[in-house]
Length: 218
Image: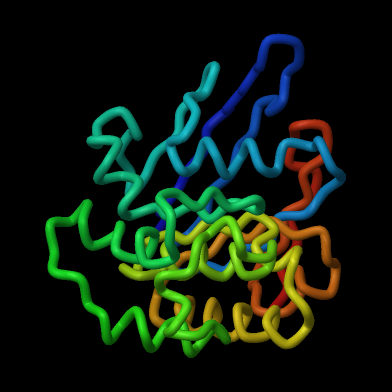
């Protein structure tokens, strides 16, 4: 059963056609890596899937229903997008990690926050640390935790380990594999060929805005 379906999707910015007639069906529970050269349209594809930008033409569906039939806020709670260059808001790490609870009108689960910080090699004592003082890799991990604080149906990842060392990269990969084993659908953009083969059942190659190749990996 497909969870996300793109039917003849085009996206054009002011100058260029970025996505050029994309047909793509992602089945519920899949783990799919997305590869391709810089500028090929990979990140734009994820932005469209996360409802951050509208298609120029074509159709995109979630669970068989057009994206337009959903409230954007509810759609984005179910389809979580973690970008390569994370934007951390507020002043502190805590400001970012309480946010998923605030938008759902839920009490902050401080134990869950603490456990996730430990899982991703971040100190609980850092909760009041200014986000401006964090390294690129620390920002990526904080943003990742913010995205998975509530388990989504679909997790979109855009080069989320690009600033991490091999140890922390493996921690992220293992956690994503655990989420996938629990039924979360994964789409992960990566430039790392080895990474694109690790936990995935399919690999999609994007070239010049088109789906060039779809490979079964296991």
